[in-house]
Image 1 (tube, rainbow, N blue to C red):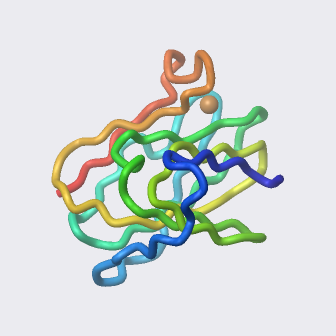
Image 2: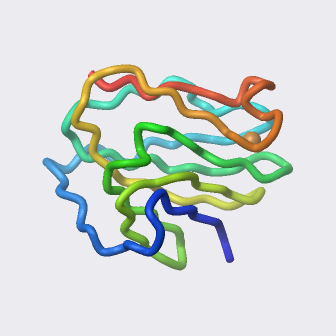
Length: 131
Ligand SMILES: [Cu+2]
């Protein structure tokens, strides 16, 4: 399997995201040892957002954001498209990439991190700034 998606709610893949207006092109987020680039990502509230993650490191990394656990998201890579009622984590092996599309309807600062053991502690974390 190209990447692993763990569901916050098991087995329910059919809830269609209610997206607002389309957003600008995907925001590229690179994963390396041990950081996300950029680590601060500014998003407009209520706007459909696509984050494109690329693992440019030598080991696996994953993206986890608590704020995304309970909102609909669409995950895409070159092989599949999955609609989720909430995203628990997106794990990418070295060289892999995938996109996550979602809408945040709440302003604020929402943390994200790579939760593989030791990675957050080494600095692999960031924030979604929704304004
Ligand atoms: Cu990591």
